[in-house]
Amino acid sequence: MGHFSNMFNGLARSFSFKKGRNSGSLGDEGGQEAAKAMIKDAKKKDLILCTSGVLNAEGSDTFASVFSKKGEKGVNQDCCIVWEEFGCQEDMVFCGIFDGHGPWGHFVAKTVRESLPPSLLCHWQQGLAQAFLDPELDLDKKHQRFDIWKHSYLRTCAAIDHELEQHRKIDTFYSGTTALSIVKQGELVVLANVGDSRAVLATTSDDGSIVPVQLTVDFKPNLPQEAERIIQCNGRVFCLSDEPGVHRVWLPNEESPGLAMSRAFGDYCIKEFGLISVPEVTHRSITSRDQFIILATDGVWDVVTNQEAVEIVSSTPDRAKSSKRLVECAVRAWKRKRRGIAMDDISAICLFFHSSSEQDDHLVSTL
Image (cartoon, rainbow, N blue to C red):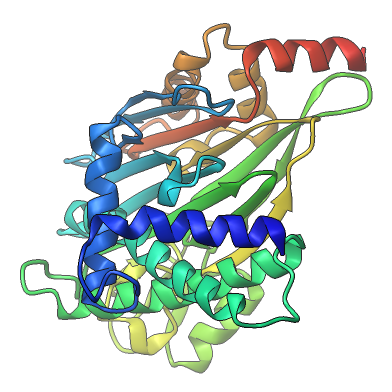
């Protein structure tokens, strides 16, 4: 319990931004204000990145590269966030990528980007507080740490989707967003996916080559378990004649809204007919062989394979340009493979786990 006790005490100190009797709990208004204060403080210290660019906190081994490019359908509805020292924990990083759709999609995506990290911190702190009272719990064990993150994510996503429905300034009836995020806590990586963005890990094989490991499922409507749920709720799943292979979700009695994913925040016109905002929450332990994770919207994965993506990123000499190069390669692939089809917004985050020198040393040792 030693590591856990230190973690809990450190987190308690980090929430001292909000003075007063409510500062101890993140489940109440005081806790939410404390989380907002943490965001403000992190921005002052340049620990949060919400635009294309790079983030590498002083003394940190992790390095993040972010790039987003507007497609040919109007305003860019993709958005991203990287937060180093997430929750004032030196060994934690949060990354999230959001792909909006519908008339208000860009507003929904940005709203979820702004609300998900602090809400997750609130629920995580609540989980830690409850666990701290359980003498049988040992949070030095990864699976028990993961359980707290999983329950925190499930509660967070449920709360966010409820809040979106009540939002007075954003029309979320025919608009929504996907959300793919990860929390890296030491060597533990927790992933939560709502929608069809994808996370791919690049790891080193025995012969020294870079190989991909897909960490998430693309939640498309034609996946058997997704289609079964939608049909049981009286929704429909089919392709339009001019879009063979592109399965969409439709209302029972009209050809609307035609969502190309089976999970999303918002889109309340079809929430009663099988669309859900429940995330799939999984985890992975990072080893010295693992080099980086790519989080990208479907604009990348529609035209670039997992293997191509990890090769593009790993072969980019300047890590700072890795996400931009991946996006630019996807743009060229769209023009080559999908002529006549309006290009989607394309966005990517590349999160590197080791310093450049550490990665080079490991590659040499495997050869």
